[in-house]
Amino acid sequence: MTPTQLRISNSIFVQHSYLSKTIPLLKNEITNLEKINKTYQIQDSLRVEELKVYKQKVLKDKKTITKFKLLGISGTLVGLLLGLCL
Image (cartoon, rainbow, N blue to C red; front, side, top):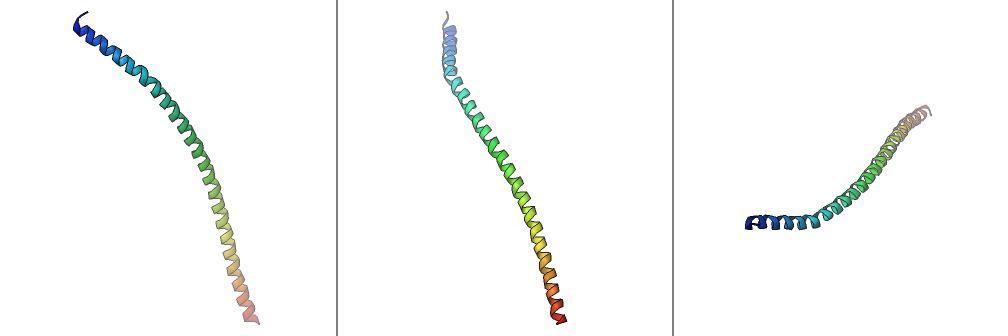
């Protein structure tokens, strides 16, 4: 074996050793990131549902406010008319 071949061979073994340690760590990191991603997806879908509920509540409250405004205006008009009649 020539010195060049020996150097190349040693380099291959060093890379193999490095990758043998690195690959399991990367696989573990990928697994952890997938778990985190799944958690975020669940949280996101819950927030979307929560927003839908809030939007429905806001629409309902707007309708209620409009009704009270109309009742307030009509009540004031009736009071004024009664006051003028008496």
